[in-house]
Length: 323
Image: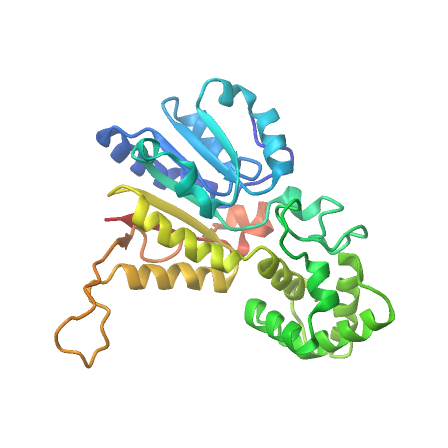
């Protein structure tokens, strides 16, 4: 069993080398289960299953199409009981993994990037050249609002706030006004339409250079909003810190500065004891440290990976140990 064609898991070497250390801890503690909160096309997990014959993996993915593909592709691992795939948002893990099974878990990985399948599959609305959809929901069967709903119904001021706060889009207000003007003429129904609206705004500012497609931040902000990505990361961090056994590790991979900031601030806060304001002499909060960082600085892609997989350029891995 190999990775799907064209699918390159980021920071794989860094992950495998650190997992080797964790596996020794797991064997000493008698635990054999690892959780993949964002299974996708299985890159990180399948590498582990190929390397560690004793390992069992519980995998989550919110996308029903991805789960069906994974169940077919990795049927052998599923049949032997080494891989369990659950179609659900990872924030629900504590209600979907039994307490007995959770006691066997020694670690987990959460790769917060969008999968290549979702990014390039026409009709999902994630891709700049998607001329079929502007959905962007990871689970298109959910009742959550779609990106098309946001773009066609939200007022300009709210759109601008979304683009700026979630993706640091510097032309957020101009882009929001352009979207409202365009939808007054014709409903915006595809990602390609939206991308072209944003590009036209940037063409009025030839002095601004971004290094990526001008529509990148606007589309990313919509995806983050529609899928509650930042809120889900915060929920996952809090739930794992209260549910996972002592000495378990959580590997996080982020692709955006705001994502990384959430993880970094969580580590900073939860690795401290007292969090009372500095002017309070005697502790009143009763807060106890719950985690500690395994790596003080984030792990980033090396030169070889950057050359072979440009998508890895913004990836950062932080590893959290629960104490």
